[in-house]
Length: 385
Image 1 (cartoon, helix red, strand yellow):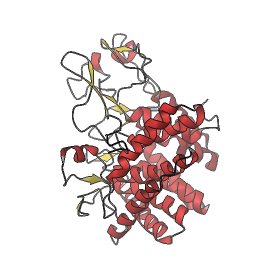
Image 2: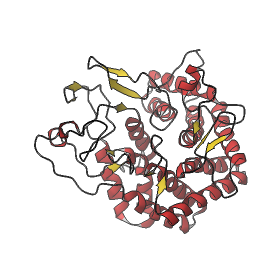
Image 3: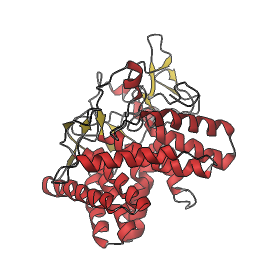
Image 4: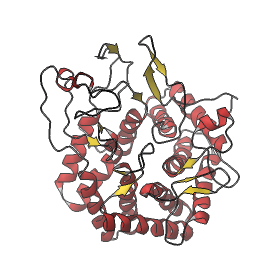
């Protein structure tokens, strides 16, 4: 609960009800990271307060972070889905994607709140506690885990998703100077990177499908860039390039051509710069917005313009069909700022795969959060002009 005693947070997204009206998804709707991105939204609101002086942005940002700051457990783990608390589920699983996102964001939230004139030492404590737990739970080969029960028991370890915790470890070392975090992060990074090099793919980052995917390798890229910042070692740039070529295999490097009466033609959706999700969910989405800053930085580090060109293509693609409050898709006017998740580029979909319904009606939270996060990470560089 927030300091005012009430839940303050962001819904995971909107769906259509039986009457054809938009409503918050009725179940599983409060998530710290992944699709819900509560912490990222809160930090962006605090940044908005810094830029504009908006008291509303400040109050919503702090209230959201205060709500989630009550989710830390005594063993260092963190309840990443608030639905577990609301339902009283004391055995709800905690996944590495959300957990790593929580740690990284609470480190940042501590800094931004302080810049806004508010001391929230509990934010940083949460992030360090997560890192301490993961260090103690790490396997000898460097593997963290994909998920845990609240009592600290690992319920599954396979998959590259554990790498979502490596950037948090690097940040914990940067702040504390305690080498245990760097040693742990490097050991995990080397484990997950070796798997990519040996197998040629990464897995299990898309939490609703445990298979070969793109999301699981994003934190490998982010870790390589951060390790280079920390050490200036060229090997991490080489790693980042190798990881980026893998990520590029998920990127659409061209615009597909569709009939005039097709959804993509009617609404002007372009596939260039989009990424497919996984071998199971092979629709397109704008998730690659999450690594645009890394590719901008990689382009500078290598002098290779392809990474900047790809980053800008992703950025432009990810800004398609964001509603201004009047956008109507398939007969439903979308609320301002909303954007759907999935674009079905082929005859495959969650429903019939009908060519007239290639654009789904799941207005999920994460695309907006990633756009705002990209802007705040690249602010001042005019990188996205």
